Image 1 (spheres, rainbow, N blue to C red):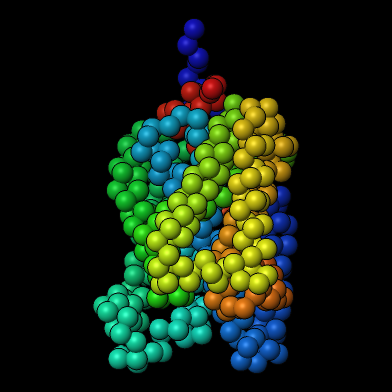
Image 2: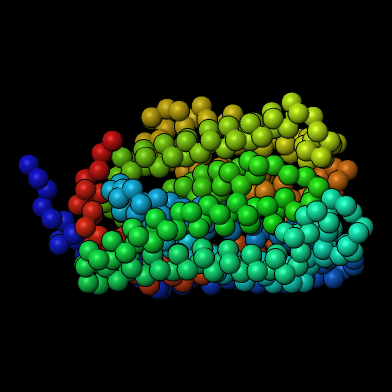
Amino acid sequence: MSHPTLHQELTADTISPQKTGKFAFLSLAVGIVGLIASFLLAWMGGEEGQKQFAYSWLFAVLYFFSLTVGSLFWVLVHHATDAEWTVVVRRQLENVAVLTPLVGLFFFAGIICFAPLLYSWWTMAPGSDELLDHKSLYLNHTGFYVRAILYFVGLSGLAFLIRRHSVRQDETGASIHTVRSRVLSFAGIPILALSLTFAAVDWIMALEYTWFSTMWGVYIFAGGVGAAMALLVLIVTALKKAGHLKMVNIEHYHVMGKFMLTFCIFWAYIGFSQYMLIWYANIPEETSFFIRRNTESWWYFTLALVIGRFFLPFPILLFQATKKNPKWLCIVAGWMIAMQALDLYVLILPMLHQTGANLAWLDLTNLLAVGGIVAAAFFWILPKSSLFPVKDPRIEHSTHFSN
């Protein structure tokens, strides 16, 4: 027996601005306090404090960038594959993805002020390093800024246009918005792939311009996309506990858990493949990256990342019972989001503290500053539309989805 046309019966599931307003205010307060504390710590630390601020700021910004772009990827894949299960949770991915331009503002603010402190090649004169001269057509100030603008314009534009079509469909029910979102997604997937790959090279790999890896973009992609799915689990669960998204069932959790497992494995596969190939070739220009992260106390951070991001969540997510248990899945999701932060920390901070880890308060205050303001923007966006695409033509199949 076929199901009734539920998208004609369902009403918009909205959350009141009063309910989200207190969380937005609290998040904004945390962000402002974190920002003030960061400025004070940087000022009190002198030149070393400014340098620590620059690296900590880059770490914080790229952490949230990985979550917003990872969410955008899931939205694009949803439309490109005409997926049904994601319809009831897709709006939350759209809400996170549309925060990309805000992260972009934080990025440019940091780069304009601190690029010379982050990138050693930034202030090197032509002829001072033959290797840099060979890369100068790519590694130059103009190219760096132009590419960064293109990345954020392309990614932000995709996130904004797809969310706009999704929200307008809530009002009109016109299927043309689904078609246009699908066309945008087909064009958007290669845009996202290229933007994320080259951004990873420009912003992280270029911290050590003598090093290179052809698997770098895929590695950054794997971490961000897996963390974005984990973030979705936490957001959906929080909304369900608040009495919303009642149509999200255990089967939806099961699929989200499957994708968390998929990218847990994929991240480990890419990371091991990159390490194994560089270790086997044993070329000094390549091995320097891993030698630095296996030096002194950085070795413990690297070991914690390998164990915490793969060997701990992998056996837990293998079991269907875990993936169908929202409480357990939320615990694993929170852990994976924390491991994404550790991953980026190990990628960025060893270039500042090359002889061993040196935890600084600025690492935390900058994370709170960027995260607090981004979270406030999310809570401000949340009540602007229905919590799920109420008139999406696939809503009937999504609400009755089963594995």
